[in-house]
Length: 208
Image (cartoon, rainbow, N blue to C red; front, side, top):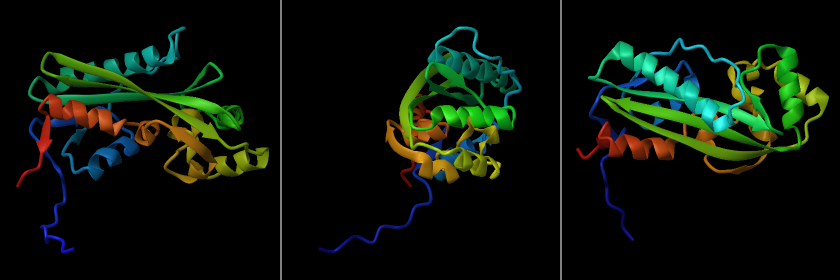
């Protein structure tokens, strides 16, 4: 069976409306860049207060909405804004980014040998329209020894990550099973986001 000699393509999407990513996360930026989507980065300065009794999805969505509205007010109606927030939940506890070594150790000790949930809420704002979604993924960790946790903390990978680990990094070996979107755990549920960006006509398929 012969294969056709199709020309190589560097991207599959064309950006129709200037897109702004309201996040300083290099993981979110990398996820979008891999798809060839053009965007500018403008991190939100919105404070991230601890949850005040909200369920995890409501809390994450509240933060994502605040970030989207802040940057949209700065960039104006000619651009679309994408903002997101990710939280990790284990045994009913919402785990954000660890503030210090002890907190990161406690988070990983809690995750050890257990299932946990990762919620990423995102908001796409274009003109007067605000599209919101929350994606959920379940992750099972292997049982970690204290030596293992201390060794991982010395890599400095956990410090800016919800739940104190990076599934796409060194911590990938700690993960025994994933149920749901892997990119959601990294920081953006790409399948859902691409679906929304296409539907809102912010991007289109690259046809040339």
